[in-house]
Image (cartoon, rainbow, N blue to C red; front, side, top):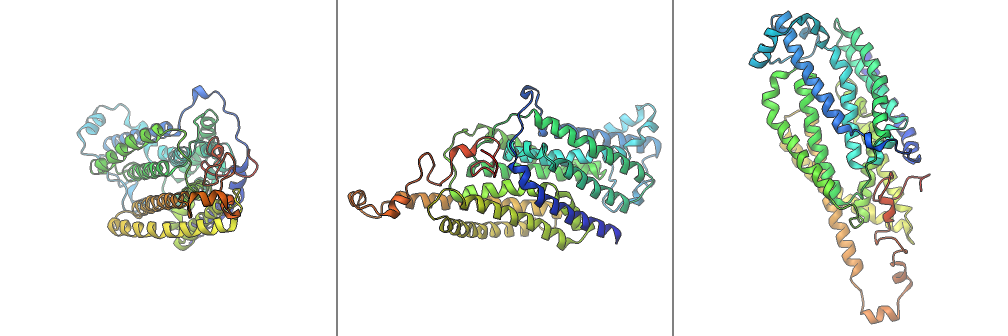
Length: 447
């Protein structure tokens, strides 16, 4: 009962902190880039941490084979079902175990190494996603109070779960997680300080490539959790095709995103609204993400779902506010039209998500949620792109003969002329570059 209360409290505190601090983090002017030539992307760091996690799994297997004769009963009873499916019959690992000197020195591979690496793994995964969407968002998050706050929130949740699964190593694990909570934000902030990647306009194609990349990375994260962080290296052969599919998808999608021209035509109003909503939501969801995830299993699921939905709703309201304050003679009519378009696109997305959820039912709930969310966004973004194309086509079609329009143009006709230097969607092309939410209005306080 105490664990449930603590996890629920972490959910509430994290959401409140995110709602209070995220607007300030997005509004602050970007810090200057330092030593851009020495930058390391979070994806490279994530790959390194993932490699270390699997090295620890191999060493843990060696330790169990040599010190405990392949028997995990010294630790397995403390954990729930689904842990410690070891690859003790793997010939390579058995050969390594046979010749490994002083295997008793590998005792820290039991939970302690994982306790240090799990936080950088999840924070770097989130940083990678943010940088894919907009490098400026990654830099803002990493160089603001949001990063240390997320580190504290994630560590508190990890430690609460550790205490719920108490074992002979719990005290060590909690102390190690506290050290990781201090060092990891410093490392990521230093990486972001040297990052010089440019933001690109969030067109429909770029958003779709981002959603595909997010889905592929999400699959890989789930595979790492299933096979390594839960000490199930024996499941790796079964999960290898899925992991290879995720790596292959990233190998296609990320180069495709990098090859898109930097100066594509600006997105239409509906696509811009979706892009801004995704940008805002990633920032708002960053701090409470892990608390919400563990709130489903260790806390109150309804509270976790409500907290996640609240971040979505607030992100949508911010995006709509940004769209409605763009220079326009009839902002309320514009906002109403955007809401109607987004509502129609959301219905299309909900239908796609429902079909995918039905198809994926029976797997891990995280996998089902990931696939359904990706299907929703892909369908909704595609619908918004079609709606924008239809709106542009209607706007470019004269409602009366050209000569009559030139001679007897009405004030409404004149109001349809976009302001000088702005595209027909009403968004300044300069807003789509730099560290702001690309494809739309810069946050308050920026220029």
